[in-house]
Image (tube, rainbow, N blue to C red):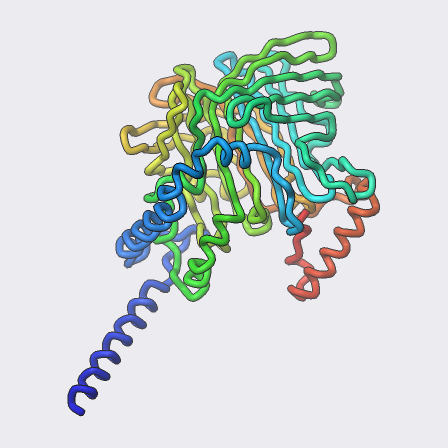
Length: 445
C-alpha cells in the first residue's frame, strides 16, 4: 500500500513538472512591432529540441530515401508541369531570374491555377533603354480558357510558353506579344534557353539549414496550436514542393525591329502543391544575386506567423560549378528593412555558410510594383539591383512582399470572364459564412 502511494506521488510530481515545463515553453516571447519574436528566456532549450526533431524528421523523409528521391524517374516527375488537384488552392509555378555584368536583368514568372487561370509577369531591365514589362502589370491574371472548364497542362498563355527540353537540365522561355515601356507598347519576340550548371538542385524542404529553421521555431510560443501543427508536419511537407537550379540563360530578343542577344547567369524556381496561401504571409524579402566570378547567392526572410514562422531566414550560395551551400546564419531582419511598406534603396547585411562569412551590399537601380493573388492579397516591389559581395561585384533582383487589403480594382476585375466573377462571389459567400467578418475574406484564386 505504501508503495502504491509512493508511486502515485512520484507520478503526480512528474506530471506537475511536465505541465510546468510545457507552460514555460508556451510563454510568448517579446515581439518587435508586435510581429517579430526575440529570443525568449528558454530559447536555447527550445533551439536544441527543435534541431534534434528536425534532423530526425529530415532523415526519415529525405536521407533514408535518397536513392528514390534522386532517381531519374522521380526528378522527371517533379520537373514537369504538375497535374492540378481538385483542391481550389492547387498551384504550379515556374520562375526565372537572371542578370549579367553589363547590368541586363530578366525576371519571368508563370503560375498555373485551376480552370485555365494563369498568373504571369515579365520584367526586362536594360541599362541604356530602361525597364520593359508585360502589358497586364501590375495585374498578373490571364485567362487561357473561354468558359473556365478546361484545365491547363502547360505553362502557356498570354503570349508566354515555358517548357522543359531536357528534364532538370534545359528549359525554354518564349514570349511573343508586347512589352510596356512607360506608356509605350513595343512588339517583342523573345526566345531564351536556360541550362542548369549541374545535375544538383536546392530543395527548400530538404536543404535549408536546420539551424536556421530551429532558430525560427525556438523564438515562437510552443502552445497547443503549435503541438497540433507538429502532428501534421508530414501532411504539410507532402503538399508543398519548392526547389531551385542555377545555370545560364541565353538567347535572343527582338524589340520591335532591333535584335539583341542576351547571356546571363540565372536560376529557375519550380514550386507546386496546395499550401501557398498568400493571405497568411505577413511579409517576405528575397534577394537573387549573380556575381562576376560566376557564383550566385539567394538570401531571404519570410514572415508567416500562422505557420509559426514569424521570421524564417533562408538561402544558399551556389558555386560556378553548381554546388550549393545553405546559409547557416544571417543578420537580415525584416523589422530593419522596409517595415513601414516602403523598401529601402540600399541594404547592407552579413550572411554565413558553414565555411565562410559574406558581407552583402545592395544598391537599387530601378523598381516596379505588381500585385499577387486573385484579389491582390499581396503587393510586391520588384527591385533591380547592383551588388557587392565580399568585394566581388554583381547584379541581381530583390523582392519585397507586403500584405495588401485594397482588393483588385473594379476597372480591372470588370473585364474578367463571367464564370470567374461567379466563382469569386461564391467563394466570398463561403468565407462570410465561415468567418462572419466581411473584412477577413480572401479569394483563393
